[in-house]
Length: 198
Image (cartoon, rainbow, N blue to C red; front, side):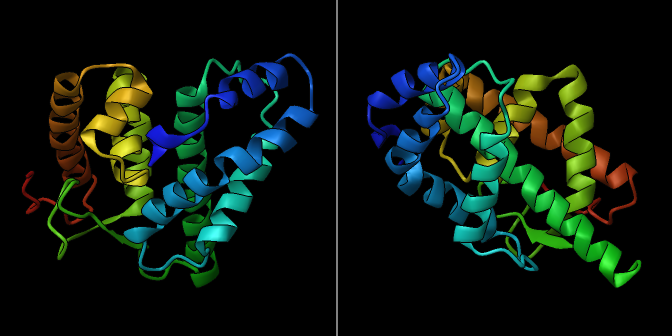
């Protein structure tokens, strides 16, 4: 559970931001369990994933280690960035698989009951990523809510805590983002026009 991470995380993030590269090495053991939970949630709907939980955590860690420009605020910000990085890793893997197939079937992910569709329906991960990028241009908070809920598998309450907004705002942003994404995916010809929001 994201809310159980130790308080020392914020201090280590501040030290890392201040240029202490050893702070990251001290930070990872404190957040590793939560990163694995986050990775497992990210992978839960990804049918064609070639990465396992440990691989996704490791790849996210490598990207975190290279992210020297991030102005870390606190542990909630850390997990929001970690979720975004895991999304990027999964999308990069999907692109690699699509390229290797030379135009084969689109990579499909299951959108569970907390997401845009029912478990039996699917959406193209790459099309979803493109739609999220478009959403982020005019509604960045809605995009972050989708990342936390869909890619991170977080609850309304966890998303609220990480983003520092109320549960009601998360619910409203989630509902409107899903509707917007359904429309965008349908217009992109992804075959998701029959999807019904929950």
